[in-house]
Length: 447
Ligand code: CMC
Image 1 (spheres, rainbow, N blue to C red):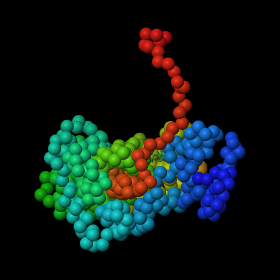
Image 2 (cartoon, helix red, strand yellow):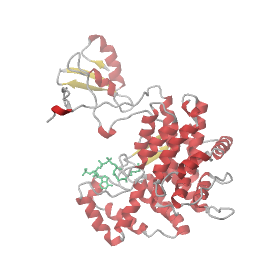
Image 3 (tube, rainbow, N blue to C red):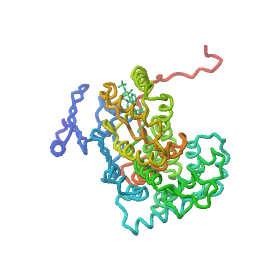
Image 4 (cartoon, helix red, strand yellow):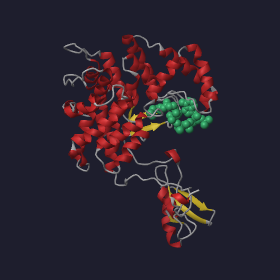
């Protein structure tokens, strides 16, 4: 930043203005400043020199919930929320959902390019051969209560993996980093399936390396006494596409947790565990679970108008779960893909009776000024739960499925953060509004 009143800065100022800048006049002092504008942003640190006196800390930007603050430069995911566009590394989500598979997309997200055949084979081989977890992890999982929520189990066991791989601390060594990336992507379905089996009191099923990533997950979840578990190809494909749709979504709450925790340089198991914790909340990845509970509570199509009325009159307290998004102000493109896929899944599983309630909710909400004025459209969680339920996943496994798909995105964002020379430990500022200095009063003297 240059202060325009300084004569020595005239040339620099002209250069900045030529490139694009923002002129700020501080009405407290009458001083004028030129702030460079780069990729549609001004640097918050450039505000620091705007002050009223020499000992003034300087101006900060105030942005609770990061409504308008870019925390990083990223090359992974592009979203245009107004137009409902989502691309991974430049490829439209619809094309990836149509023509790719989850492991290929994970490779793309992590490396920046679609793999060649040899690269793909090597990648799949690495993931396939890291699917097992240490037997002590099993013992650890056995210690959870029979009704433990699988997200609690997942966040704890992913953190526990940190203790099994001490070399994971070598986060600046690309080889060590990639080893943990293989492990995390490979092991998260195993941990997820174990969490489910635990809640059912069923024996844990070991990975089957002959199956695809998603096929193996399904057999670890649902295999009973059969010698060979037959994966239904339609359901396998549908779940694989759901993993693709969830693989990354730029700087959302859990990804920010991954980057924020990762910025103090713990190993990626610890950072991923924090990300899973962030995802668990009902406003984020826990929303798919809440959508199902909401649809069940509504109970029938004819009760939809009364529910919509309740949402509108609640002053923001009752939400239409699965609607609205911080970034999308249009139909979430992921919800569109899921809706189109639903018929194929229901042909195999039978139609989910809650679908009619969901369709009616969408129809009524999209005609209602309350929702249209606020640009509230169905998001990814609105229809995903109906598919998961039809595939026999219990409701509390829904956010776990989200976490499996999102692992590749978290890891890509974590690596990008570590390699970004501008990044440091994440440490937001605050505006302090508390008490001024006070003298300590011993307990007996307090009234
Ligand atoms: N139902 C009813 N009203 C809503 C909803 C909703 N689902 N979402 C937002 N609003 C209202 C909100 O009350 C506010 O109204 P007003 O202007 O009168 O105060 C207005 O719309 C703007 O909402 P906001 O809370 O300021 O928006 P946000 O960007 O902070 O929140 C959100 C985004 C996703 C947290 C929110 O839309 C929400 O809670 N949706 C339901 C939960 C959900 O489906 N979450 C999944 C998000 S997609 C997957 C993921 O990223 O995990």
